[in-house]
Length: 429
Image (cartoon, rainbow, N blue to C red; front, side, top):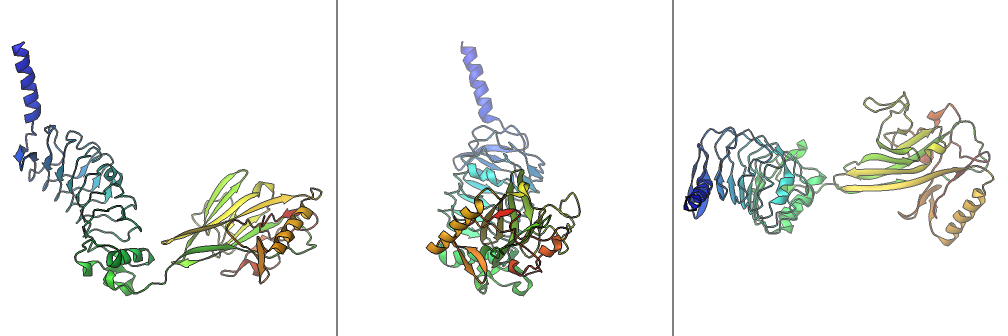
């Protein structure tokens, strides 16, 4: 029994005293520490004591941190990795370090970083990531770091910052973010406002937080950035009222126009939901002649849904398969806006024409739903669905193509569906 006890004590002692051959282990400042600095290491060595709380791997030749790199040291409170050759930190490399308070990754070559690992490091108080190659920080990167006091991101390749990036850092008192090549566009204005007026965080070297682009602002400190003409996107779908007595010819085109405003100029996307499925289109996908642009996917020279650069969307040979919801989404650095229309077809004898007419005129009398301005029908609020259909003669779909930059009401040669087939403009109800 005594021999068994001695053996157990020997095993436990060995576990506590274990140390990688190339490192030095001991007690420092009352903490169990391991010093592996300046050892020309090319990988994180195995065999650390399980109770280590301070680990230095600085000034080595580590090329990266793989998943589970520190799973042997879950009690770690300080981790120093500065002055290595680290280019990437894989997902799961740091996730087990829930007790970590100080992390130094400065002076490396990091361009790929598993930001999601930071979500597990809620005890972190110091994060040094300066002098790397970081070009992007997700908006939610720091969402769990409510104990973080000092953050160093200077001397990286950051061009922009998502609004609200630093909002979760309620304990932050020191931020270094100078010497990054910022694009001084509308997307950076929020940071100027936050840094100058909305925060008590100490931000040194403010004159070195400067613009790299556009060229006219190159070298301008963010603190002296002039006002920029910035506005969030807005969208408006509009169309001309029906022309009574229009004659349907074989083949027609549904044409919608999305009028977009905002600065910077928003990117326009169409989301189309039909009985056959959902289609996503980055506008434009065709040129002014209606033919597919290079890089756009289409089975033939003319795609089923033709999105033009001026905001028009054409659907040649519109039929039952094309019924559904058509939404245009505009996005820029300041946000997004969306507007939708629903489109349906009905044949004579269904009684829909009289019903719809009564509902439209009833809404007009009440001053609700749709109203007209300059012969356009527009929704009076975001809850209104507007059905917009233009027709052209068969074989001449180009007649429905609006000139670049001109609104849909100027389209020529278009007829609204009349007696032969009723197109239901199920709007404003």
